[in-house]
Length: 329
Image (cartoon, rainbow, N blue to C red):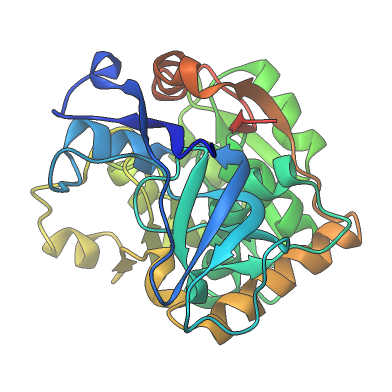
């Protein structure tokens, strides 16, 4: 008899890593507009922790995870363009990617080029598409700019370093150690600032000859908010795209005027790739840079689903570099 069960991570309450439970659950069948993906690799991202803690609420109980890569196992009745056996990847599925099988609306799935491995795809979809919208849509870099990017040695950061180099952009990356500084520079950062012992705003002023930067990309949140504003040139843009250190709250909007008539935006991936056409175009740009070896994925941590608590603890404690994935092969 065919086994209809699968392994999946579930939570029944919000909290620390201890709330993560690996369970045997029914394997999903696709809805009319879905594809069921038999997963080979799954991405781990900070947003997963936000849902575990309840910072981003979702009705309990639920799974975790939004990013993965694998092979189409079944297609819904209305689905066109995908068939069983297709290699695919996704970066913003319905919650629940920490599982051996996952239903994803076909409009959120892209076909994976033959030259890109499942592990790399699971590490690059959410992070790589995040850099695509940040650099090519939110503030479209033309080349020649000097920018500030926080957490430059993380999964998103190392892609950003490489993409900036490919565009001819000078990326100043913040890091927390000499090892992470070396890693960011190796991947294309023009300069790095070790915030554990350097004043970030003062160093940006020095590195830019007093001009500061036109845009700051900040996925850290609360801890870096004020510093980021101090690094911006007049009428510069603050792009706050994540909350690794907690949410930015209690903001006095008048501070934007005081610090130079600044702009601020809080973007997310979903609205930048809200059609299959936009998603495919963004993914094609990412895949093209990977094919040309201008972007190379660095996966420094691999875990099984049974190690989910250990994996999230390492990410939350900023003990990781590059990307982290779960492997199912």
